[in-house]
Amino acid sequence: MEFNIAYLCLQATREGQASHAHVHEIINGLRKCKCHITLFEPSYAKDFSKPRWYRKLFSFIILQLNLCHLIDRFNLLYVRMHPFAFLSIILSKIYKIPLIIEVNGIMEELYFSFPYLRIFFPLYKYLYIIILKRADAIIVVTPQLKDYYSRFIPNIKYYIIPNAANHEIFNPLAKSSFNFSFDYVFFLVL
Image 1 (tube, rainbow, N blue to C red):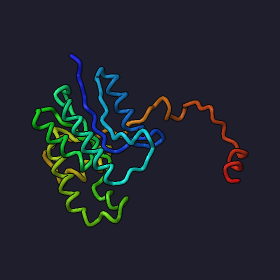
Image 2: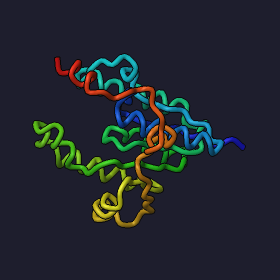
Image 3: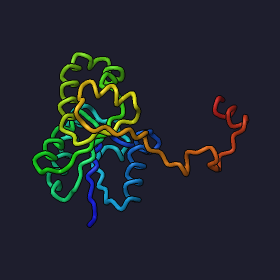
Image 4: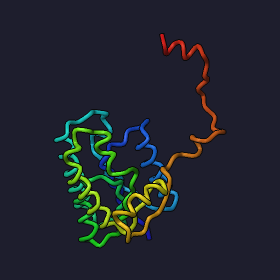
């Protein structure tokens, strides 16, 4: 039997960014385990645009409605945590599909990154906790994140799995065609 996983990532993953490496290396690892993965991510991830908030919100809704249409094809829903993923979380419970949520940071990072959103933090925190309580398991990338979230959601199974990276590329013995020289540095400076 083929194991089908829906992977929901509401953050746009763009090549060259850490989130792209993490998401796509997790997918590669799951494929090596003979899983079939379908990635659901915003359409603007591929065009490198910086959409306005209303386009992002619209994209989040459309993406999850598309997932809703296909949800019965999957054995598992894997969600990279996002406060607007609540529609998919509800779907997983309605269809009785196991839900795994990956968490990569603390809730307060919202207003570290976007200080003007600090006023919405109580709502954001509430949504975050409600979503995480619906998970069958939570994957965190550090032991500190497990300790942090265990204070809010103690009765759930946590797994600590560091962010994924391609170890063939990112290792001390990796070969590169790039030759570092001071001439190159001076070229960049000038």
